Image (cartoon, rainbow, N blue to C red; front, side, top):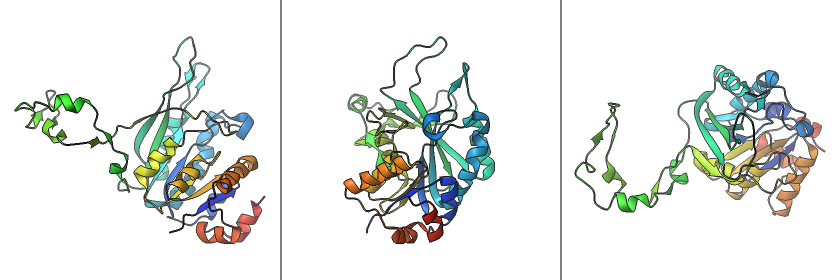
Length: 295
């Protein structure tokens, strides 16, 4: 089946309202952080961030399938020596909007820049917050399993009688373990911490993430021919990863230079970029809406 990649030039706050309901399997995006990327996107004050984002998240809630997932890459910054609270405020506001705050992943940046501050250490992680429309959603955990590790060779070599039984928790939690369950396992489920280096080639964009980041979540929450959207497309990492993994995707970008850069990348990779008439068929955009945002 043919994979469709739709790249749209425009403001996602305006474009999203023209997409049909319940059509997207995964939203993976990293919007501008509060008071950052001012030279690129103008910047949003922390006190206004929630009000700015809620109309967008309302449309994302509408277009996401009931079984779909929203992964939001975002991080508070330090202002006058104190962490901002706008991310926590946004989570609470989105819960009131109807989102389930299901999980929080951490992206550990293995090659974060060194530095010295009087009252803190270097910042080497970012949030990846998982939201869903309901408590039941598609998740393909076996697709992101990792090698069990060398510890198993020594730990499982000589199992004691206790190891072969469900060992009761020493702290009275009611949980326990049966170490023999690890026998003959080559792979295990990962943790919610992803250890990835930052993007060294910034692709002429002020804020890029490594392709392995969206790839991991695309594998976890989608299957081939599912649809992924990045409403803040930027350098197009999410869309290019989706295309190469056999997923349909939609990317929305408000700055023309970045939009054109992604379009050129797709053409250079000999990927499919549909003409406007076919775009309407795949995204549900009407002709009038698309012409307004056409270059």
